[in-house]
Amino acid sequence: MVIRNDRAAEYLYGLNGVLDCKGKLGYCIARNNRLLVTELQEYLRARDEAVIKHGEGATINPSMPGWDAFVAEMAELDAKEREYDFDRISWEEASEQLTARQLLAIEWMLEE
View 1 (tube, rainbow, N blue to C red):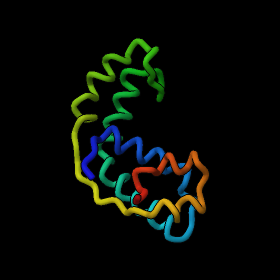
View 2: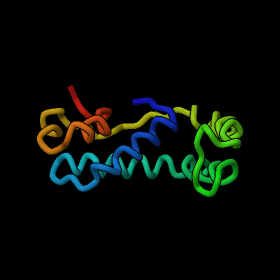
View 3: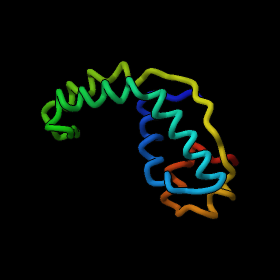
View 4: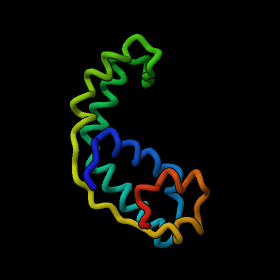
């Protein structure tokens, strides 16, 4: 799967709510989490630095004066694409353990 850095970061943040899963699902989630953390290390560091530079403390949002500068600084890094070989799991297996909200967070991992 080829995805942009900003989308990969969204996937990583979405995994936070399901890291306690066990069994095959937990294994898939843990492997994908490790892959994303490893591959996004430089991107996340640059993003954190841009947030501190343009935001207020460790926070940035569209209502802040530095938002446009933050978006401009991150545009090139956000748009970089990379191919990921994610572990996948069937919808049936995942739906037995997860809530609807959790399923939405990992829908990119689900096989048809």
